[in-house]
Image (cartoon, rainbow, N blue to C red):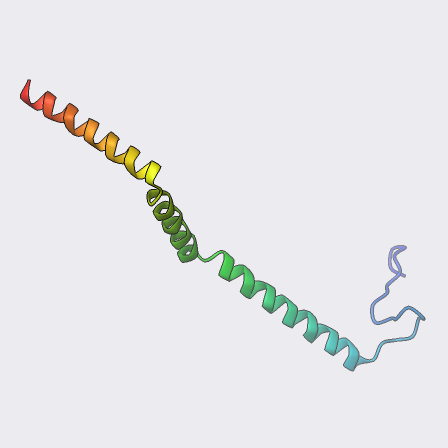
Length: 88
């Protein structure tokens, strides 16, 4: 007991010290699990993945006929306004 805190390190539920090989296996299992988790996080947080996802989203929206025709209409309106300003 240190400062009123009991230490459970290296002890099982029945109070018997754990086998060092079992502790080593637990550490290796935790390390492998952490490595898998870090690999998954690095894949999810990859900036290239965000860029590709954004591109796909924009292309999908631009392929929608309602958006495409609205953009064509806005472009035509801007072109007409520019031409009118030039020739006035």
